[in-house]
Image 1 (tube, rainbow, N blue to C red):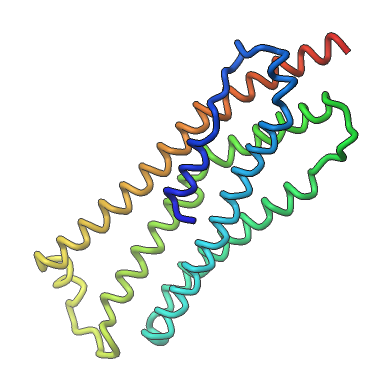
Image 2 (image 1 turned 90 degrees about the vertical axis):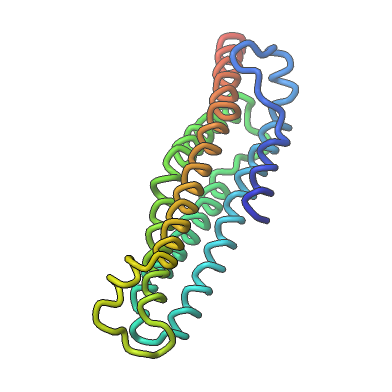
Length: 216
């Protein structure tokens, strides 16, 4: 699964109506929508674990090729493994928070509200916690590789020449724009999905909870 596949999973979800949703419909569709939303979060965590492991493996391979002088690439390894660990912990947390099938609807709704609020915070913080650090360590990796071509010693003034050479400077600009675009897109996608999917669904669940609490 790549980023486009993950984004498509979100887009296949029917948009919540929000506070204007019909209460009878909310009751009837609650379990189905809860399962679909859980499947989206599961797909996200599995995607992040897999991508992080691949990234860490690639960084270790690059470090091995370069040798001891490639030690700054360890930052990329640490970041990637950190993402994998955090995503795996999310799966463990979700598993531990599963409810017994015979609990009341009110308990299920309360649990779903708490889960969506938690996921909302994760989505809104994804850009700063994952994308920006990932872009920084990737740039560090590229600079490390550029400064040590093969196993030849870096000549004096090499980094200055790298930044003043029109060709290499152009590639640095292109990569910087690409990283910036990725961060911007990831941030836009997550904020759009919070606005279109999570916030309206929270409004629906709050309405359903109020109805259950006052009628049962």
